[in-house]
Each structure stands twice: as structure tokens, then as C-alpha cells.
Length: 302
Image (cartoon, rainbow, N blue to C red; front, top):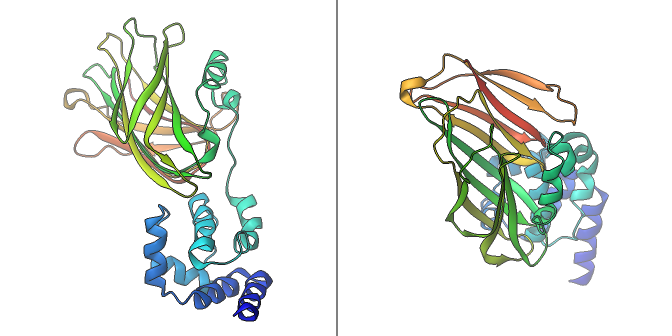
């Protein structure tokens, strides 16, 4: 059995990736459906069709969430950690952006990075598998709430919390607050009205071990105020497997057109932009598979 194991390890290490993956799956004795099921259990879903394409060489994992799944796949198939990941490392370097510094994400608000450094104890050890931000706007296009739904995966044992921050377009005299909705609680909360920013530390309802995944949901609640907003912006410091930024407008004041923008550097220049359609319910959705770090925003007609 030892010699057989060594031969399998040698075949996997020799590559290329499709051959190594096929050998690892054959050696595990698992069918593709069983592999898919075990990946899903660990919070890194990959379809049978995708697994088949990977092992046949018809496609290569390059997106951030796919590369995360390869690390979990090594565990599922019982091969040497890093043996499959190392075979797609060049693609990872080309295709996946790394995290930004706090200063790069908050270039106009130098106080925020210093405040965040007190809160984000575990942020570096979480992979963002998915995130959905839903901003609700009142009849004057004033911000009413931001609901956040995140799927996260721990990269080490003992991960317990996540920091969250949101900058409102203008300061509010009455402090906004964070309401935990699912699988988290507010540990600390800080609102700085002079910069219109609310920062919170959210503690999970269980301690995560390495490769554990969790879904959390929470909401920033904004007191009513006068003043019209013309855009909403969300800052992503880390890559997100699938990111959705959605603006839900009051039926009485749906704008005629929306557009999205992405800024990725400290300079205030637009890296990419484009139109966003509005649906019949008065919502605009920006959907970004494999979202790189940066500042994503939705803008609408005045």
C-alpha cells in the first residue's frame, strides 16, 4: 500500500494539472458526484461538469473561488497538500488579484484604516466565497439600509470574527447601527459622524476551524434624513468569488438610468464602467463573478 501511495503521489506531482487531477480522483476511488458532494459540504461548491472539464483539460481553474476549491480538493482526494495547487500557480498569479491595503481601499479617509486595524483581527484568514449587498433607498433616494449576506471560509483554526465598515454619502446626526440577522452578533460598534462611517466587529455564532464555511447576514440601519443621494459605493479589500451590489429604489422615484463604476487604486480614476439595467421592481443589480478588490459603485440620474 505504501508503494502504491508513493506512485500516486509521484503521478500527481509530475503534472500537468489535468493528468494529475485525473490520477488523484482515480486513486481516491470516488466518483465525480461524490467529489462534488464533499466539496459542497466544505463550502466550496464545484459542479460535476466543471470537475470533468478540469480533468480532461478543456478548462483550467483560474478564478479565485476555483483556486480556493483546489486546496479543498486536495484534502478530499487525500493527496499531498499543495500538490494540485502548485500546478495551477502560474494561472493564479495571472488571474487573481491579491488583497488591497486598508489605505488603498479608503484613500480619502485616513482615519478609517487606523480604526479598522483595531477590529479586523481575523479578516486576513477568511476567504470571501460570495457577498450580496442590498442597498434600500427612500423616495428622495436617501439611504435607508444596507443588508449584507456573506459566505466565508476560514483559512486557519480558531477564526471567530469579521470587521465591517460602511461610509454613508453624508454624515448622519443620529448614529446608524448594525443589526445582526443570521449566525453573527455585534461585538463592538463605532460611529464617527465627522466622516460618516460606521465600523463594527461581528462575532460568529461558532468558532471556525480551517476550511469551515459559514453564512452570515447583517444590516446597517440608517435613520431617516433629508438629502438626496446620487450613488452608493462598497469597498472590497479582498477578492470575492461572486459579488452582487444591488440598489432597490422606492417605486415612487425609480431613476431613468443607472451605471456602475470600479476604482482599484488610490487615485480617484475609474478603472471600468458600464450601464446597469433596472428591472420591473425598480432594482439595479451589478453582478461580478470573480470580483477583484476595489471600490464598486452604482450611480443614477439626478
